[in-house]
Structures are given as structure tokens and as C-alpha cells.
Length: 166
Image (cartoon, one colour):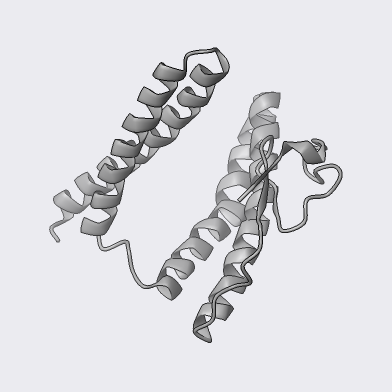
């Protein structure tokens, strides 16, 4: 693929991915505000943006077999843990942006867990085995990820009721 097309697809993938997430968050806010029709509109268009992002990622050659996808996920999570969030957090501290700092610390701590979960899944996939089929719980406040929700989130201290089951 020619460099300019690759850069354009990469930029389009990033934009569509951000639009998908933004519209999903907007949908939740509309739902809370009592606008179920607007919430549904946001969810539907968010799905369309996800389709666009998926098509761009596929065209970039970014969708592979599960072991390679796990490698990519491990790489992304490790980058966030080792480089991105520590650097971003230092800037937030320097600029006394407390909400940004808290958001980044929470994400950093959750990303450490995600990387480890992906590493374990990779080991299973290399043996041509799936991971144990059990519920996964995500703290809706900070993103802490676990198989067994604690009484209080170890990252943000949210109560057990704030964990969403997947």
C-alpha cells in the first residue's frame, strides 16, 4: 500500500473510532436524560462508525488471526502502560490538571491488568485453547477489569455495584 493511502486510512480509522466512542457516550447521556429515541440514534450511528473503522482497519491489514491480534493488543496495552500514560500523567501533574491526572492514573492501572489478561489469552491461543468461559467485570468508574469483583474497586474505590458484567 502506498504511504499516503496508508496514512489516510490510519487517520480515517482513528477518526471513525473516536466518533464511535463519542456517540456511545452521548447515547448513555441521552438515555440518562430521558431521551431514548436520541439515545438509539446515537447508538445506531455509532455502530455505522464502527463499521467504517473496521473496514479501514481491514484495508490496513490490521485484522489477523487471534494470536497476532493478541500480540497487537499486548503491544498497545504495554505502550500505554510503559510510555503513553506515564508521560501524559506527568504533563497533567505539571499543569495541575487533577481530573486529567486521575483519569490517566485510573486508565494506567486498568491497562496493566488488560495487558496481563491478553498475555494469558495468548498463551492459551498458542496451545489452540480458549480461555475459561467465565464472566468478566469492568468497573464503570475507572475501567478496572477482573474475573471476581471486589467489594470496593482497588483503583477508584467504587462499590461492587459499579462493576458491569460481561
